[in-house]
Length: 226
Image 1 (spheres, rainbow, N blue to C red):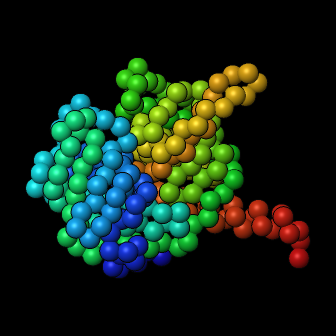
Image 2: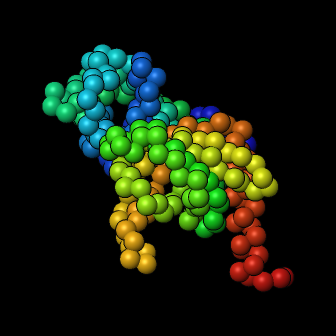
């Protein structure tokens, strides 16, 4: 079930929120809210960019997707850009926002096989790298957690192909919001938290159905037969 209504995450994105911002270039970029007030909101792009992607006065759309499958959208205008690094952007929100409400989605600890390709990365040598033997540690409709040998960084963008049971391929684009180093059997790895940035609505619904079924099954196994 999908409902649209006025945003209820406050009147504007809050400090610390991980969001995406998309302007006239139609390129969605990962960012974090640094400061937030009715007058202006400062965003920090996940990493510096070599090009000026936004112009003062440009209209942009802000998107936030929480753990309960609620997508929040705000239309805004760019009011300031830092000259150094082009990493910080100030915007003003000029509407109340819209939410798209789906059924509450769980985060499920399940190992779903997937492969991914790095399509944008702070380390340009990683762009084009493909890993075909990954699997999720946990997953929700907003994102997933996985381990990898690639030295991914926050803001890197991946194209993903998940094999969601029963043999349903699911395609998505996501960006890395956290990448923590650890060792396994003496080998350096990364534990990566990824947030979905683009996913077809039909595939979102299929993933949600799978997660609800998995949660129900895990609850039944944990509690035992009635």
